[in-house]
Length: 182
Image 1: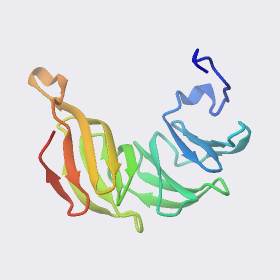
Image 2 (image 1 turned 180 degrees about the vertical axis):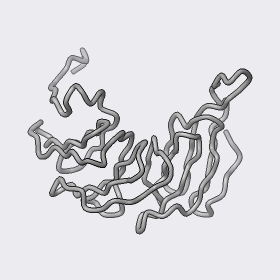
Image 3 (image 1 turned 60 degrees about the horizontal axis):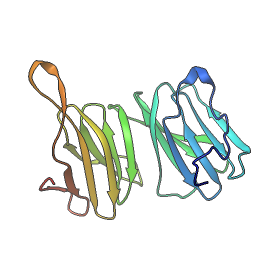
């Protein structure tokens, strides 16, 4: 309401897993991600499923895939996991050599790494199509809409101190080229 009082709350993950790292909203419910599990509740707050998997070690991000009933989850671990939303099961594993911290879906699956790079990943076979070194230290946030990707982040300066980059980097996803920063 106008007083911003809590309407409802749901315990999605055990306290030992730490905070909820990301939400995704689907027509069938709300998906939440913690470091070791994915949880789905209906719009009324009833648990649909809770998924834990031995390869879920340090999850950081998730995104929808080209199929509307599947998501991909990733993090600081050696594989990305494809999860079927209807069944609440891991249906595929995609090996990776990098740690992903953020994901946004557009023409490609845009995924930021923990080293400040951004990978454009194919939505069909999950291979890296193009990679850019977006920021010197880390990508803080990004958004992918239509044919554009915009990132903001940090760079390393003197004495190893990270500072906020004053410019947002822009990439054209149609031609896979960087554009002038804004």
